[in-house]
Amino acid sequence: MTAADANSTSDMEKVLDGIGLFGFICLGLLVVLTACGNIIICVAILRNRRLRTSSNFLVINLAFGDILYSLSTLPLSMVLMCFRSKWPLGVAGNMFFDAVWFLFLVLSFLNIQVIALNRFIAITKPYTYRQSATKQRTVFLCFCIWLYAVALVFALSFSFRETDGKVYHFLILGKVYYTVLIFHAVFTFVSVPLLYLVIFHIAKKHKLEIIKQDAKATRNFYRELKATWTIGFVICLFLLVWSPFLTNQFVDFHDIYKGTWDKRNSVMCYITYCNGPANIFVYSIWNREIRQAILRLFGSAGNGAISSLTSKNMRSPGPGS
Image (tube, rainbow, N blue to C red; front, top):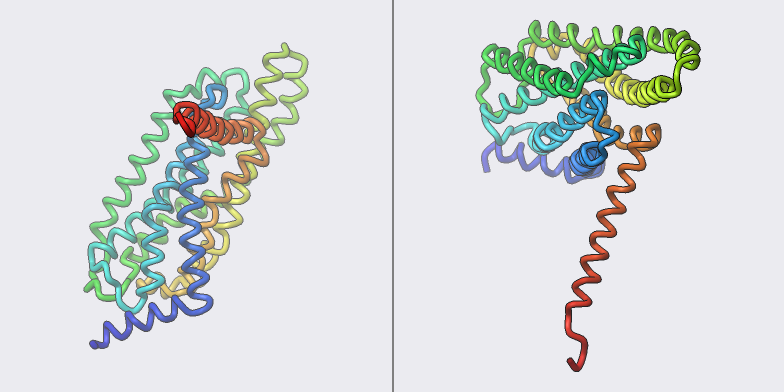
């Protein structure tokens, strides 16, 4: 047995022992919960005509990103947990892991910024919001978000560090990584809470004005305000989950800048992964329309299964026939 094989065996033994096994199982559960939970959110919104609004299209875009990262980044994180001393996927696997991880990091912060800006326009411009934020424009905006993130990561991939692929290394250059991190993550942590403070301050003024208008305008405003509260809880959860990771990036600045990605950084990443499956609970608890759509989705699935089973029993010949 070679030294590399011995290290690989040692890594597997650590994963299968105690805390390592618990972490490995948790990551596996996160894959299932994130993918299934966000698929449920997307299907529930798309099947309900009333929920197919421009703001919910942004929610679908966020959920779609969570689905993809749960099927790419999370499994690769499980591989890294098992094979920290000997990376089994080579140079290409190392580059792909860093690229998709960085892609979804950028996408997460971009989506939160755009969603908060959408809520700002909905509350501060209640009379013109529906005309300006159409579904077609929202879909095009989502496309632009993905195009920007993919183009950015693709361009940065040419500056990745060289590696032999035998051991995992963080390949993104330190100055590039921290420039993008500050531009997207730090800006989000500062701008989005301030934006929401302005939103609720203006909402109080508009609330008194719109109540004096017709009933339809009042209903539309309250609906957008309710959606703003729901998205506000989603944003608060997002900032809470990402705070330890972002803090650690600057605490371990020198190591990360040189390309060292230790276990503490990995643990901080695992905490951010919890944000994906948590969103379905936030939407279900704080948005009654989405909660009802999810319940109807499961109800129709259950009724379909029961009716299918009943029809099969009716068609099957009875005993003695």
